[in-house]
Amino acid sequence: MSQVSFYPGPSKVYSNTTEYIYEAYASGILSINHRSEEFMHLFGKLKKTLHKKLKVPKNYEIAFVSSATECWEIISQSVVKNRIAVCHNGAFGEKWAAYAAGQSPDCIELPFEVEEELPIGKITAAEADVVGIVHNETSNGTFLSDPIMEGLRSNLSSDTLVTVDATSSMAGLALPFRTADIWFASVQKCFGLPAGMAIMILSPKAVERAYRLDRRMPYNALIRILENSRKNQTHYTPNVLNMYLLYRTQRTSKGIEAQHAKTLKRFNNWSQLIDQLPNLNWLVKNEAVRSPTVLPLVTKNVDKLKKATKEKGFVLGDGYAQWKDSTIRIANFPAIKGKEIERLAKFLRRYYP
Image: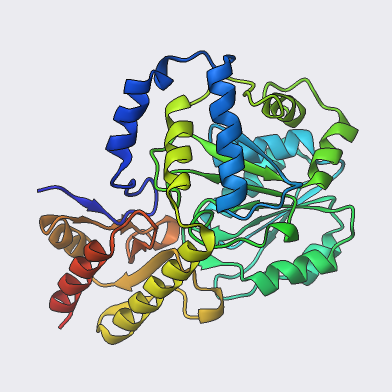
């Protein structure tokens, strides 16, 4: 029996991925030199498509790297003048903060509670020149609303860069790009692609900071990345297949506004179901901070539930960190088909009568 993955990353890839892989092979894309005209043409089309489909501001630049984790390093090495403050309420934000502290001795960690809104006042008081936040915390299913993002931006000095890990929301939700300066995400979640690539979206202010600091020595220095991206090239041998798959899947997409509406509609359907089921409860009680794309749920006998769903052809996500033994996580990502969601929902109704 084939398995439908509801794991929150790497997760289910788009069903037409096989077609596009063969298309890439048959066209010779997989064998092209990454300094060739053919590759640069693909790179340029991909950037143009992402600007259009994701509604990226025209004056924001797009670049590609290997992973969102790499972006933590790029930010610390390339745009931090004196101090970075990383705010976190879950495992991935905490890992970013720990990494930033290793790169920047003056790093400030700003932890906050799962049920709490982002503490804008604490961030402002930190007086950092770079702020790091997680838009959608995959470990516990919390996210930052547009009003919170706008409130953060308006309370910081104009010289402060806001950097955002949006790995579990980019391409699934419409993002308020102008509220931050560096957005980044890996492609194995809402983009519905195999793991192995990440996207960086950079404001003019972030680009200016990188050039003003002029740190060119690290292999993945942002200046090096930008100078290559502007030539429609990369500073490393790129994942050409994933770039092609990203281009093809985004080109056929109806656009982020339609995707955002679909994500929220599906989330509302999930919410109605979960609220009706006994012994299956939300990890995050505060609806204002509850993620529409990653749904961590508390239940008894987690292993029994995962085994039962796997026998029916579904893979649920494990709980993460301190919630590992008490929760499961369900991805609400675009590549998952409506009929697959209906099948899982039907099973859960029977499992929790």
